Image 1 (tube, rainbow, N blue to C red):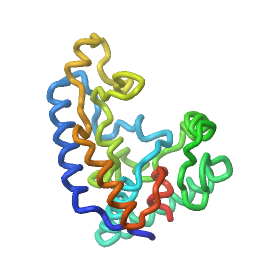
Image 2: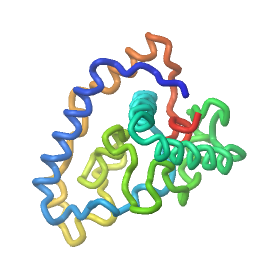
Image 3: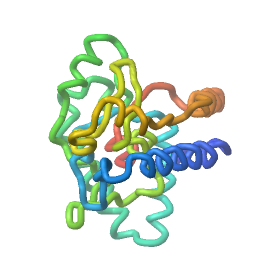
Image 4: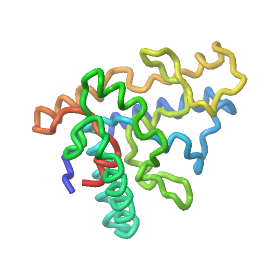
Length: 203
């Protein structure tokens, strides 16, 4: 398994995002219903950065030393997912890098929406690499702003007004540290482009 070095600033990024999540969760209170075992956001593939992929690989490597059977089960689920997804993958099915043209992006919107994350433990519905999870996973639940507006988990904020939702907005990475870390990785020779969890932990 390729285990790209993590930039020294990754831990700082994780701390920033986790602190923002804790603050948004506190402000959200009972509107936020995310709990261990709630797995709706663990189905359907989503793109992750090369920094996320490296963090997942490091997490899997750490798990390998503590519990090789669990680590091997993750790899097997990831390999099975790659086999299922490769024929219609909107990118390079060898490297796992997603294509970034408009047609590929449109295909990815409808791609593998029922596919379980290979890092999800099917027995208890929890993340096997929770401490190493991607930034997208760390920011899911509270309201997060994108080019499409303020989005929330569809299970959360039922009955909340637009104003109540806006008061709980989470600023994921206000200083855009992630972009700087990705540039640092590319300067060190890490390929650019986004991928998915299965390719991050299954190669």
